[in-house]
Image 1: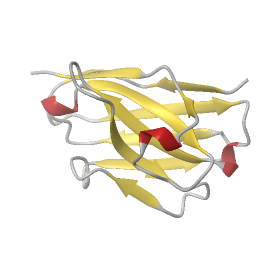
Image 2 (image 1 turned 90 degrees about the vertical axis):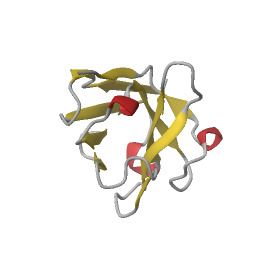
Image 3 (image 1 turned 90 degrees about the horizontal axis):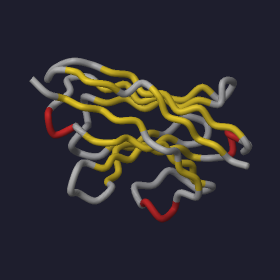
Image 4 (image 1 turned 180 degrees about the vertical axis):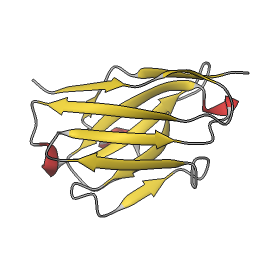
Length: 123
């Protein structure tokens, strides 16, 4: 069975930083593109960032460019999301997902999902 487990969320103030981690098991990790999505209260799930299976290509939503960085360590079966300069609008549950294809902002292209980790940004 495939499992994706997110961690690293928490409560921070505007301008602070967090690093999220997603640990994968039950799949050939290096064969999958990985993505981060988020869902704020009352809103639909939205794309945040994605990375190719090799880590050679990365993609970001306009709302997080210059602030967030996605990376992966295939030896550890782990993908990360470094979040700097957090804003109140970043408050959401953040989900890790795996795609057998190329990195994509499209939710339906991801076959496996984690349970999410909550990020709260409040002054």
